Length: 90
Image (cartoon, rainbow, N blue to C red; front, side, top):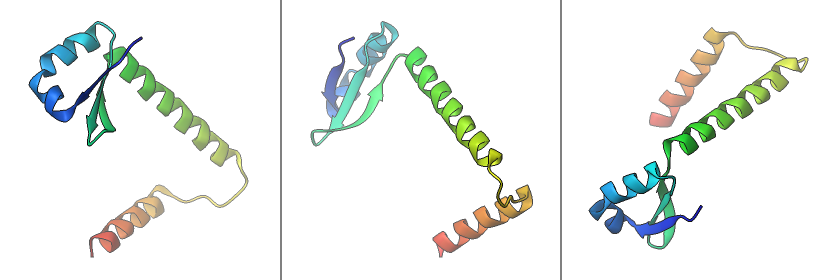
């Protein structure tokens, strides 16, 4: 599968073309200042990537749960998350 590489400006000007190419199975990599920053990909590829990420995260969670170690309640987890957010905003 050959990919297209375009600048942000080109992607903006021809977005419909890049979407059509993605529907046909050809991704488009979008660059800014010569560096890849985004991609327009076929939805099947995106869904596969999302499924793979979910599977990986589930396996990592299972491995952590299988270890004998301290656990936290959902309330403790949420309290920690909100504390991090408020400290980061300050």
